[in-house]
Image 1 (cartoon, one colour):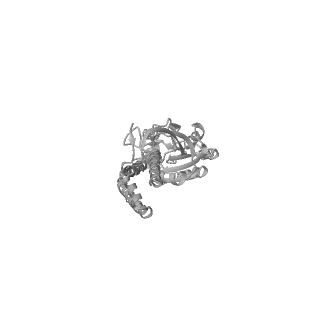
Image 2 (image 1 turned 90 degrees about the vertical axis):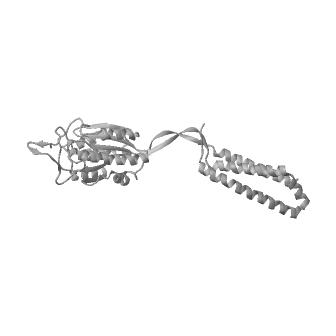
Image 3 (image 1 turned 180 degrees about the vertical axis):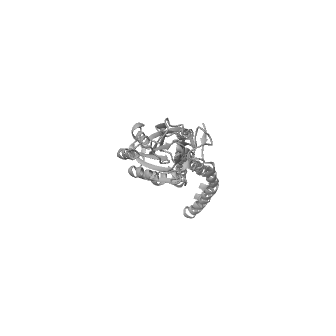
Length: 335
C-alpha cells in the first residue's frame, strides 16, 4: 500500500516540533516557579522530583506535535471512486471540405488553416473539460465524422484525417449541412448547443437562410466563420492534377468568400459572424466571448479514482494526547 503525503510541509512542520517543545518545557519550569512562590518550595520540589510524570507529559506533547505535523502534510493511502459531474455545452463544428477549401489564399490552404484553428480551440476545451464536441464535414452532402463526445483525442484524430475527400459528393451545400446537423444527427440539447460553421461562404442553392431559421426555431445557436479572399478570390487547385487549377468551360475557377451570406445566417441563427477573410481565424476569441459565458448543463458524471485522506486520525491522536497531558497535570495539582 502506497502512502502519499506532502514531504515539504511535513518537514517544515516537524522542524517546528523541537522549538515548540522547548517553549513548553520552559513554560513548565516558569509555572512551577510561580507555584513555589504560592504553595511553598517543599511542595514544588515534591512535584519536580517525580520525573516519570514530568517526562510523560513532555512525551505526550512531543507525539501530539508530531501527529499534527503529519496531519498538515495531508497523508493519503488507499483509494475511492468518486462521481464528478461534468458541466458543459454541446459544440458542433460544421466544416466545409469542398474543393474550393483547397484555395491557397490562406497558408497552406483554407482547409488546413481551418483545421489548425479548430485544433487550437480544442486544446483549450480539453483543459477546461465538460464540453461535448462533434465534427460534421460537408460539401455536396454532410457526413458525421465524430458524434458528440468527451473523447477529445478521438475528435482530434478525426479532424486530422479530414480532407476534401471526407464528403460523399462535390459542391457546397451549407443549407443541407445545417439541416442535417439540427435534425438528422440527434443527441443534442438545442438550448445548450452551439454550431460553429467554418466555410469559405460559397453556397450552391441549398437555401442556407431557411436552414438557419430551422436552427433558430430549435433553439440552437449558429456562428459562422468565413475564410478566403472576398474580393479578388483565389484559384482552386485541381486535386487530381498537382500543379494545375480547376477550370470550367475553359475559364479558371475563382473562389471568393461570401461575407454577406455568413452575416445573414449568423444573424438568423442568433450567433456571431466572423468573416475572417485572409486574417487569422480566431475561434478562441469566438468561444471566449460567445460560448464560454453561456449557461451549461450537467452532461454526465465521470468516475474518478482519488486517494483517501487520513489527516483526521492524526488530529484525533494529537487531541487525545494533549487531553492526557492535561489530565496528568490536573492530577498532580490536585495531589
